[in-house]
Structure formats: C-alpha cells, structure tokens
Amino acid sequence: MSERSEQAKQPGMTSHSPLWEVFVRARRGLSHTHVGSLHAPDAELALRNARDLYTRRQEGVSIWVVPAGAITASSPDEKDAFFDPAADKVYRHPTFYEVPDGVAHL
Amino acid sequence: MYGNDFSAPNGATDEASGGLLGEVEAAEAELRAAAARGRRGGPAPDEDLAAYFAEVVDAEQKIEPRDWMPDAYRRTLIRQIAQHAHSEIIGMQPEGNWISRAPSLKRKAILLAKVQDEAGHGLYLYAAAETLGISRDELVQLLLDGRQKYSSIFNYPTLSWADVGAIGWLVDGAAIVNQVPLCRCSYGPYARAMIRVCKEESFHQRQGYEILHTLAHGTPAQQAMAQDSVDRWWYPSLAMFGPPDGDSTHSAQSMAWKIKRFSNDDLRQRFVDMCVQQAEILGLRIPDADLRWNDERQAYDYTQPDYDELMQVISGDGPCNRERMAHRRAAHADGAWVREAAAAYAAKRAGQKETVAA
Ligand SMILES: [Fe+2]
Ligand SMILES: [Fe+2]
Image 1: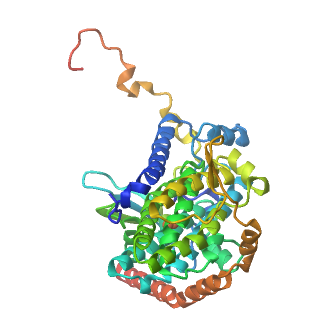
Image 2 (image 1 turned 180 degrees about the vertical axis):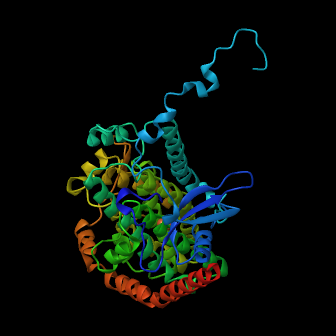
Image 3 (image 1 turned 90 degrees about the vertical axis):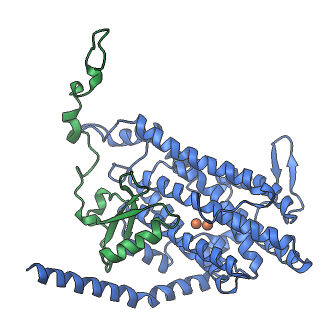
C-alpha cells in the first residue's frame, strides 16, 4: 500500500499533508520492513500517526518514516532490463562450481 | 497475539472464525509462495502488454503499482477500494454513537478500540487506492460530494446497546466473509491491506458475539433487546453481499481479473450457513421462518433480503443516509482548522531549519 504507480509521480501531494512511507522493525534482530504509507504535515506527526495506524497491537519496536518524494525508484515500471546484467552471471553462485569427490570443508 | 482477543463463550465462533482466520493465513502464505515462485520482472521491451498482464494474473502472481494494467482494471480497483475505504470511515458512526453510553468501562474501552480499528482500515484502504494514481484529497472529495458510495448497511440506525453486539456479530461477520477472499486479490496492495484488515476483524466479530451472548443470557428485557437487534440487522446484513448474481453488473469481469473470487450469492450462502449454529448457541432466533437445512444442497435454504430496499438505500433513501453524510461533512469541515494549523506549524519549522542551515 505504498509504492506509487507511474501515474502518481507527484505522490499524493495533498494540500496540507505530504505522503510518508512507513517502515517498522517488528522485533529486535529484524530489519525495518515497509508496512504502508500515510499522510502527515511533518515528520513528527508522521511518526505519531504511524504509531497509531501501524502498531496498535505492539507490531513494532521501532518506526522509520520517509517522505515518499525522497525515494528514488529503480525504474518507472518493473522492467527487466535494469536487472539484466545479473542474469547471465551464474558463476556468482557457489552452485556453479563442481567440487571433486572427497573434498571437505569447501 | 492481539491484545483484545478473548475466547467466545462455548467456543461457538472459535471454529468458524478460526476457519476464516486460517484462510487469511493461507492467503498470506500463498502470497509469499507466489513471490518465491515468480522470478518474472516486467514485460520485455517488445512484449504485448495485455498478454503480459494476463499471464501474471493467470499465474496467481500479484499486479504491483508500477506494472502496466488495463485502464478498466485500474478504474474498477479505484472504485472498489475507495468505496471500501469510505465504508470503513462512515461505518464508525453507528457504533460511535454508543461509545458514550457503553454499559461499563470495559465495554467502552473495547468499543473505542474497535472504532479506532475501523478508522485504521479506512486509512490502509485509502493508501492502497492511492497507489493506483488518485490522490487522498480526490478520494475524500468523491465521498463528500456523494459521487462514490459506501456500504448500505451503515445507513441503518443503532437503536439499542444490543445493536453494537449485532453489528459486531453480523455486520463485521458478513464483512469478514466478503473480505477473506479479497486477501487473494490479484492487486498486491489491496491483497496486503485486506490481510491486515481481516486479522483485526476477528476481534470485532467476537466482541459483538460476546455482547449478544451476555444479553441473551441476562434478564428477559435484555434477551428481548438482543432478539430485537438480531431481527433488525439480519436482512440488512444479508444485503451487504450485494444484488443476486443475475443482477450483479461487475461480477464476471472482476472474477476474470481475480479481484473477486466468489459470487455474491456464494458468499451470502456461506454467511448464512455459518450463522445458524452461532445463533443457536446465543439462544437467539434468526428471523426467517423458511430457514431450513437442505440435504441435497448441503446448505441452508433461506429467505432473500429485500433487494428493492437495498437499491433504495444505495440510491440515498435509507433511514440514515442524510444524517451520515451530514455528519461526515461537518466533521471534515470542523477539522479544517487542525489541518491548517498543523500545516502552518510544519511550514514554520521548515523555515526555521533553513535559516539555521544558511
Ligand atoms: Fe473494518
Ligand atoms: Fe470491523
């Protein structure tokens, strides 16, 4: 509920309240995960709104809010081309290599 | 894991909601599995976009905001998600009326939490609609201008405390039956929002059931109040599933796009079949003399709701349509100074930061 579509390049710049993307760390040891978005006039209110909207049942121990406009996306649509350079480099994976029988700790 | 979840008396709803909650979890697992399966990115430069879209949908993969999609798919989703969001927001009113009159502090705290959840549902859904390229301001305006609808059910009045129970049991119950299949909707942001919503809804249904159970086992006056509320809310709840399949205009296309998974009548039947046993345990009567088990169909035969009444309510002439809209418009207007003050404060602070930086 967050990533803007092509048609929403100016992400929901409503008159008073820009759009913020919300990331929540669910528990110690986990990374922050994108959970959704909300509108708020400033960062402080965005944090408070995020607490009330996305962690009403103790779903998090830490919240990040990021202005949606500050996010640069890899490509206007989810085209393959941008990721093509990685597609033909199977030798980057350990499974590419044949290990002679009997070799240990490799 | 949800703080306010308590077990239902005699385990009556445990099985049924457990089944539905199980489906929500299955939908979540399916979503992850589909993501793991599908390594497909966007279309190749020369690929036919419509064919690409169909292939993704057929493979049970999610359509994401930046994907190409048919205009009609986008329009259908905006309409459906927006109307869903409006329903959550307007839906706070009938129950909100009872917050100040809840019979105990515990009930008041629970009802506040429930109504706050509904506000949250509205906001998740507005955010999902916004990923399709419409702004929040436009969505709010469409509701205030009456150009987009909300669920007909919220145009009925809450006359007694028992109605808060009947709404939780029947209205939230019907909403869950409707929404659980939407957890598997082909549009990713909507499916993810619905998973979140459905998990919260099961508390709503259970708290309503518990209210009715308490009343139905109370004094004769309390029992009568509980029965009266079920009598009034039963048919409007059946009508929440929409017109019968023959008259449902958008259904076939939505099924093909995997926005919708089951027909209106299938979902309505499912709801009736669930409620019969739950009503028995409440000791309350479902107001339908023709309700009986049909061995052949392995389902209950039941009386259809009054669809003329449904159409009348949808077109603006229900018992509370004007009141609900007037209240929403007033609340929006009364909140204007808060929005303006917060914006002015944010602008002032941003100005101060720039001065410091300079
Ligand atoms: Fe809800
Ligand atoms: Fe609810």
